[in-house]
Image (cartoon, rainbow, N blue to C red; front, side, top):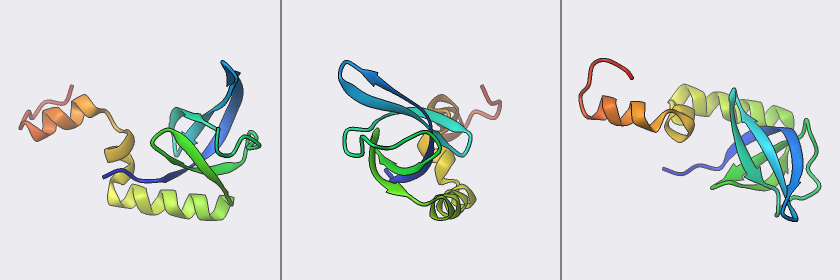
Length: 96
């Protein structure tokens, strides 16, 4: 499943003429393109899908959504260690 996940902007920069950001998804940070919402600033929240920030989001909605995703295990599915998941799915009992 591929989700649109809320996150908080922790850094913003330009990369080859494209505005980029580091987004914190409840402790997991990823680089994201801000092409669709180039006016986002550090501290604001956004919804991210496949590496693109899609829209600004208020903090309360973002935190509530992150909590729901975390309780469902979706944050780990979306952002967790793919090698670890593959090992578990293959039946390995010792985590890498």
